[in-house]
Length: 261
Image 1 (spheres, rainbow, N blue to C red):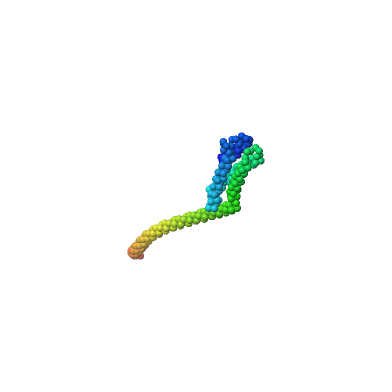
Image 2 (cartoon, helix red, strand yellow; image 1 turned 90 degrees about the vertical axis):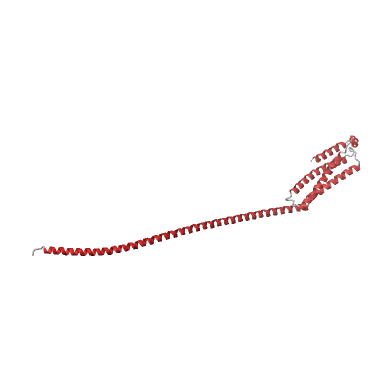
């Protein structure tokens, strides 16, 4: 903002040096302070007009709500216009002071008119940029950009939510597939173990059946032995019974022989 300070100082010097006859004597030997103020104000106007041109391009070609370049440029132009307006007013007041005190200042009507025309030209240039910045067209475009940006932001949020939901669903599906594979693998392992257990049971059953058949055969052989021994025992008992019977008769006869007549 050094140029603004320069304009203010130049205006003050201009007013001071225009008072009295000494000011008129010094003017040919030094630069007129008004010329310094006019040079700096004119340079600032050109700078603002250049930035205004770029501002219009960004307004037409970019989303003003999302363009940081546009936001920065808009803020910078607004600041420049505010300072420029203040400096133009300072120059205008200095000219008004000269006009109201013509007896104290040695300026011709042509010089005074030229300076007034310069101030008017600067005010028109300032008003043109200010009007464009605050115009309905610019306001409508920026409002539409804000609306589009908001809709775009919401759409992005919805897309992100949908993407997240899809990722969650995909993750859930992948997890379910993994669990299913684990269950299938577990079931296959259980079927393998069941098959092994069934095979072992079959082998045990075959072993038991073989042992049962062996035991049955042993029982059959035992029954045959018992039958044979029973048969032999019957024969023996018959022999013993015959011997006992014969012995008994013999004893009875001897006993009878020994009795008196």
